[in-house]
Amino acid sequence: MKIGVLALQGAFIEHEAVLKRLGVDAVEVRLPADLDGVDGVIIPGGESTTMGKLAVQYQLIEPLRELAHAGKPLWGTCAGLIFMAKDVGRDQPLLGLMDVTVQRNAFGRQVDSFEANLNIQGVDGDRLFHAIFIRAPLIEAVGAGVEVLARVEKDDAEVIVAARQGNLLVTSFHPELSNDDRFHRYFLKMAESKT
Ligand code: GLN
Image (tube, rainbow, N blue to C red; front, side, top):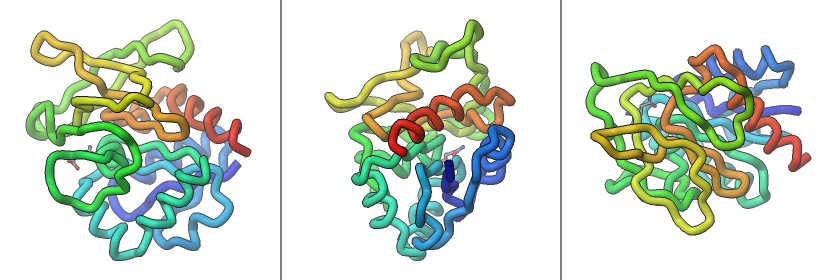
């Protein structure tokens, strides 16, 4: 099993570390050729506008779309979720793969970063998942083919923070920072079923 981690900017090292701990070959993706032979790709957190501009510059947009269309799993965390979305309410380079409407920085500024224990659909175990949100986006609306995996409370309402659409997975939070590899194992299961 070989998983690519988009390594243009952001928290890619942390994802690689989890993958290596799980005995998976992790490759840093900076150029289209780095995608050769990968079984799936993780798009890390960071800053989505910068990441998108770099992806355009390095000609990665089309190869990533092709991989997704070929059924390989893609997982976007935080800025990666924004980059995978169809609609983020503003003009910035996007993969536009996932049928979700995203609100960037929905929980406030850097100082409003927070942690929450979540019940996540499909992530097994008898304890909640400790999720870390850093200037996180939220998912405002999902299309018909999108399954909601987790919600968090915000202003007395429940907002969507994890979702899946077939081979596409997105989370507003950072599982790579949680010291809990269950979410990575969930993604690897998606990748295994495609190999
Ligand atoms: N606020 C960032 C953005 O809008 C995302 C933050 C993150 O990835 N932790 O791109």
